[in-house]
Each structure stands twice: as C-alpha cells, then as structure tokens.
Length: 242
Image 1 (tube, rainbow, N blue to C red):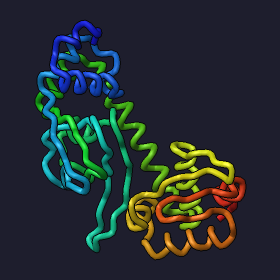
Image 2 (image 1 turned 120 degrees about the horizontal axis):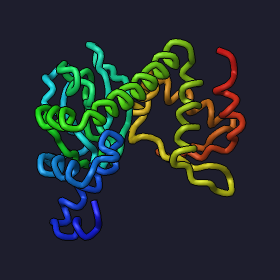
Image 3 (image 1 turned 180 degrees about the vertical axis):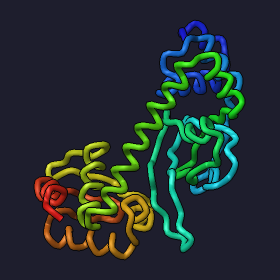
Image 4 (image 1 turned 30 degrees about the vertical axis):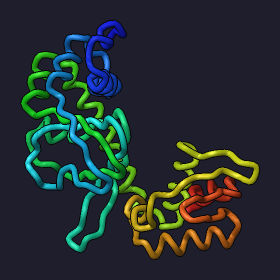
C-alpha cells in the first residue's frame, strides 16, 4: 500500500496491512487485493501458552502472525511433544488444510503474548479463485514446510541427542547470537522441556548433554543464557559421523 493510502486508515489497520504485505503468500498483490484481505482479516489475541487450535480440529481458516511467536507441534498419546516449527511476525500457518479441506494436521500455541490475523477458509478460497497466483504460492510455502519436515525426520532418525543439540545451538547462534569477547551469547527457550520438544528428546537428556558441553568447555551456562566459547568444536559435533 502507498503511504498516502495507509495514512487515511486507523493505526491498527495500518499494522494489519503491513503484516499481510510481508507474508510470502500475499507478496505481489495489488493494493486492491490487499484491501480485500484487510477487510476480512480478524485480529485475535492469545496469551503466552494459549492454544490457537488443536490437531484434528476442523479447519476454519488460516492465520498470519502479526506480533509475538507461535509453536507448531505434534503430540503423542503419552503427552510428549515434537515441535515442527517456531514462527514469528509475517509467517502464515494452516495453509494446507485451508487448501485441501482437511482438519488441522498439528497444534499451534502462542509462545509469548501474540496477535494473529485470522482469514476464513471461504475468504481465502475466494481470493484464490480471483487470483490464481496465490494458489501457486501456497504450493511453494507447503513445499518449503515439507522440506523442513523431511529434515526433522532425518535428524530424529539418524542423529544423536548431542548432535541435535549442537545443531540447535548453531542455528540459534546464526539467527540471534550476540558476539562477545569470550564467544557468542544465545538465549535458550524458556525451559529444557521446551528445548527437548524442539529437538525431539526428553528434558533429562537435554540437561545431561548441556552439562557435558559445559564440562568440556564448549559452552558456559548461566540460567537460560548460554555462551558458546568454542564454536569450532560445536560445528565439529554436527559433522562427526554418527
């Protein structure tokens, strides 16, 4: 949207419009097409830990993250969770069930206080019929998610907990690490249980492997803050044969 157009609408609508324009599904849409979405997108607010929708529930529409972060996860009958993705502002979720008419294949919950924009299945279908390029972008987004899931399956099937923990710390360092004189500082998820869910293991093994890395001088742990002191050793962990 042009700035002169945005300036005539309330600030909350401006935020919604800016969020929608950042979503890969909707990139390249005209002002009129974005306006179609903006009129139909309903903001919904979620507290930290609150469920957005559960696995197996009928799909009513898709969501776009405007603020905060969400976790997409699967749960076992015994209560164990496997996190499939952690997404932030500008991400969309539930494109596939909106597209194929099935139920939600996984659960989604807010990690922190979050605002999501909800677009109903009917409105999204109308957009796809009017603008077929949106449907093609759904295929790209779903394809990227499939590649990510294949990577998760490969890690869970062929690597150790130590390897997965090292990979997680490296990704964290690349994404949001803060260089210091003594190494790279990163912040772990809120609990070892959450970290365990993200790398496909149990809390006890996360604690044990973090302690071993600290004893070996690879990292230094202070609460949820971790200083990666030996980046090369951590990288070697991910390259060593299993």
